[in-house]
Length: 89
Image (cartoon, rainbow, N blue to C red):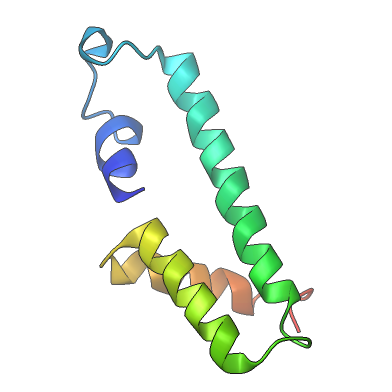
């Protein structure tokens, strides 16, 4: 995901001929990836009252590492968003 954000979404890969993706395709992929991660993380959070904390922590750490790698600021921003969401217990 970090490569995606630094490359395609930041505009660093403006030469679309090199990768064969149109801007419309890039936007669609970005939207699909956002929906995937939102759904995946929401499903982890929905298990809060039914699974052990240790299992959920490991699931969430795995998800965060796959999403952001070592990008601590992005992880922090996600936590801020989660904590401010009233639907998360």
